[in-house]
Length: 223
Image (cartoon, rainbow, N blue to C red):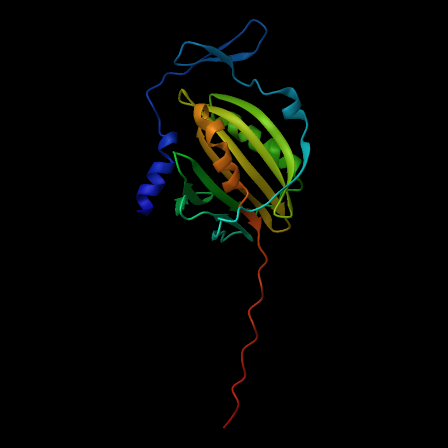
């Protein structure tokens, strides 16, 4: 079962036969030719989303049906989710602790690392740089600071084209004194808006947890 979950979750990243062609316009901008014979600028993100991070004043909290938690072994974070809708498995992949499979072909990952990053602005820059290098097309749609279960987090939503297929992603990124963690959910871009309510519920289950020290050993009275 674990193996099947991993295969299903990463099916969208398998190499396909789509041929991606790139070119440079007269103005020096890089474009990519997709399978439908349309050209797109490789990086056509909204300049405001790239340059600024909006403060969302709403409070985002865990859904009442998110009763089952998966805890990171690397950092004091957990993902609470509805076990009737979501299945989970340890990934066995480098840098990714858990894979999640939700309803209607929604997928998600939990990544946690003890690398310390000074602030969320740097997190944003690193994420964008990494995604740009790994994809054929990238567009950042939203960039916000949010309060999620009482903790300040970065929220990013973006589109990326992988081997001719458009995927849309939304995720929370969190740092504390011990390291960095992120939970990211995704599905096919054409279906993302319809599935966004379920994606948002899942993401809102991401939280920092407090470890309690074990109780002192009990003294056994001498007979």
